[in-house]
Length: 134
Image (cartoon, rainbow, N blue to C red; front, side, top):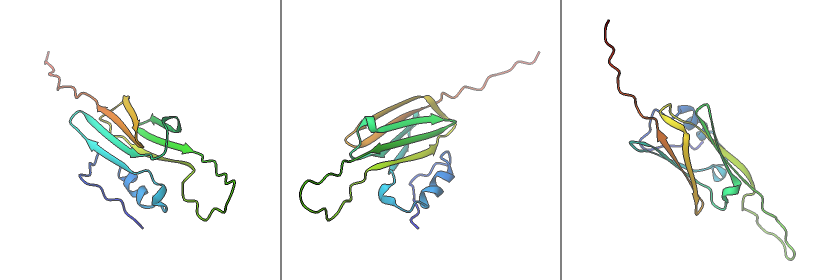
């Protein structure tokens, strides 16, 4: 079993997500992620080598962020014998529980050179309201 260790673990991220990642049997097909917290939000970077933006879907529902990617490779060999096929063709996804402080309605996504970057803003913290006594 290969346990995923993270630096600067933030309790805001679901412990279940980290535990589930440790039980995956084929790490070669697991979407590698970096999660960086900044003062005003979070940056998530996911490795998606060989995928085009048309191949990637991102959704958020009930604080669950899901990144899915799928592609098919045509495996046609006109001449010769194939001795090895290691390039992956298929789909995979990753789901993370977002902290309540995330502004789920304003997530920006960019795919550049096989790296998907999500910019997730934090909600503005409302200052404490003073209540007067009548």
